[in-house]
Length: 115
Image 1 (cartoon, one colour):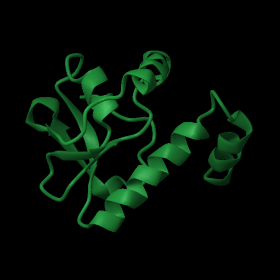
Image 2 (cartoon, helix red, strand yellow):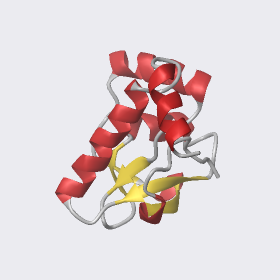
Image 3 (cartoon, one colour):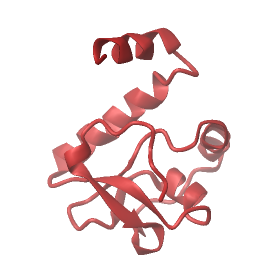
Image 4 (cartoon, helix red, strand yellow):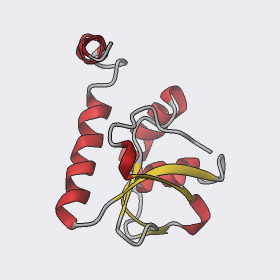
C-alpha cells in the first residue's frame, strides 16, 4: 500500500485499490510534467480525495495515473459533502506548496509544535 506523507485527518482516510477508482477528469499534459517529476522525487505527499461512494476521484487524477501501476492501493480522504471535498482539495494544495522541498522553515515550525 502506498501511504501519503501528509495524513492530517486520519479518521477520514480509507485504503482504496487503484483499480477500483473511477476518474472524472483527464490529466493535463503541461501540469503532468511538473507533478510527475515531483512525485518521482518525493513520493505521494497528499492523499487522493474521493466522493462519499469511496471510489470516485474528486482530486488526484494525476496522482492516480502516476501510481496506479506502481502500487495496488493507497490511503484516500473519503468525503461526505461537496464542501468537504473542496476543503481536502485545498488542504492538499496547501501541503504540496509548503512541502519541505519548497518551504522547509514552515513545516519545521509545524512539526516542532507537535513535539
